[in-house]
Length: 326
Length: 159
Image (cartoon, rainbow over all chains, first blue to last red; front, side):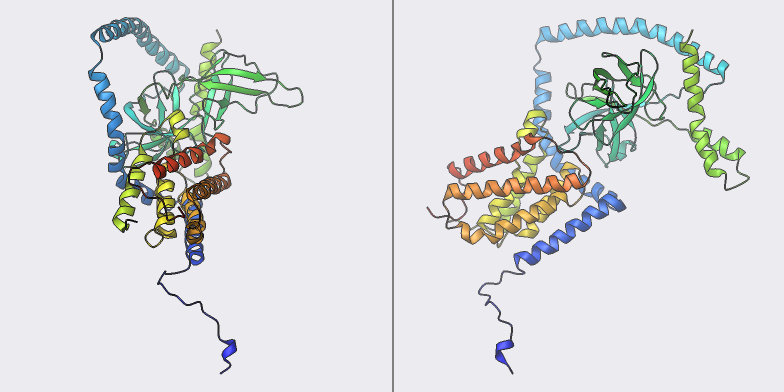
């Protein structure tokens, strides 16, 4: 036996398990596999839901001191502050009530006009009041968590608004909470309309606090600083006419075919703790009728379905324009 | 030196997770120290037989869950930091507290950079240089905890 060829082994004085390098390689491979599975295959949704549900008690404990602080602050409000807010609120209620009386009348009239034009009816979208649990912790995304989840029948895709305007959209739902992606997130875009002239566009989140971009609009587009942007309702997720943002800056660079337009969202996510989660309108009945009409051939099923979802929208927007023109 | 056992490690990690889960907002969120990472580095340097790369990886996975990002991003960053911490752990005993602090600061910056690179691969944008404020606040917290007489012993060092 040639002893010199035997591998030299370092004596293990203490049992230390696998070497750090071996462990690093193992856990790195595991993390890379997890990243790939999560980003490409979407197998881990249930796993994430389970873990978040397990973390929920810890989250409740972590939120407890802040809830206690808010509760005691509410309890210890001075008498004159209460009287003052009460007076303000009743004044506000009077103003709003007067406006609402006109709104009812206008709604009936609008419905009547729409039925005369044969346009699709605006669907009522009930909403639920949710409370913000905490703002997202990831500096790379614009998110927040609210306290409603699958237990309260919240579904991914629901629009989230507050009293001033649109906040964002529900992207992930957990048993007791759900994740809302804000409209300022880089991944989210929202179909909008300029309130002044009805111009439609899509606003994209800039990934920074309080900035929305309006890319792909020509240099000579009719937008001014201070224009209000409202939802156009084309997507079928956000109801028509909610305030989204206000144009803050327009840069018309003659070198570029597109104008650089930035706007500032009007919703004050940081000012209050309650938000409204608007349910997604059900359009199954409309789909069903069109599919029944064209169920003869399986091949045309898909285009027909596509048409059925898009046809009501141009009709609706055309009618809006028709009403706006006179 | 008081001997540490597994109970201490996991209790402190639970506490760190609780601090991590507090509803931080705005500037506080930007300045928040990375409690979990500090706890993990502390145990890696003080008791590597109790807290090794696997523990750090699991802690990173918890942070992934809490931030809502892709599974495995922070886990990988934590595991790589843990590898560096563990492989220089015995050499670190020859350093004094300030040199140790510098090394911990390097580990904190490295973790943030690794996590950022992974996030950038995932399609996110660079969030700006104030992203690194976490490391600065974390190292301040490290110093305060190590130097103050509240019963937390520094990792073994040349005094």
